Image: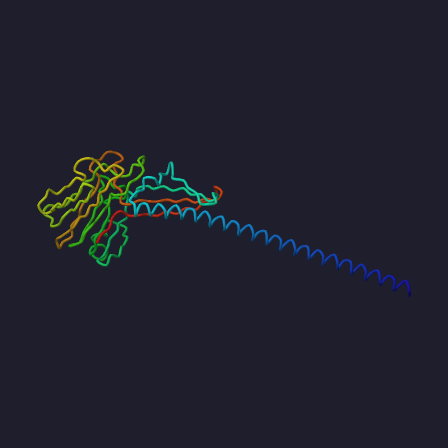
Length: 284
């Protein structure tokens, strides 16, 4: 009897030992899992922080560039794709690069009398009564860069105006503005073309003048032009004007906007990119 009780006691001790080992193993497993989760959360939080720092750097680069272009009309030091302008935030770990480039193409954009813009897919939509037929429109005959052979076409409704500005200084190494542009319009078109430049103002009566105007009439735009050009349709019918480079030489392309690219980095990694397009024209 005593021997039997001794065996039961040993079995109980063995079971207790096994249970203790199992409980300890489970506790260790839970500890490992919790530790792994904490490590993963910590790593993810750090990566989010680094991404935010990189994004903030890109945002800073863009905001400064937009201010210089809109308020100072000066993008000469913003940089080009090669080489870009480079800067950093206060901690030196977050850095940015920025540059600008010309926007030389345009979608088919039409604007109604309430200044609401519409994007269409084909040139035929410009005259479609249900689409651009009752709107002022901006487009090119074929998709691609705005050149002498593929000028910007501006269809203005009666009493509407179009303005395009070539008045932002750009980096000297950047091929941005053409040397000069032409504006063509149909004969006997009631309206005016107003040219504002650093030297003064010129007003052209499109009813009486030849149906083409070169701007500037002498010299070139260069990389620091100061021109604002406004076209007014004073009639009651639609008029389409052609605006494009004066010469057909390679590289003579007319921009209709500026693209600003800001890239932010944290420790030269975690790249974040922000792109802002600023159009150089408006219809009103």
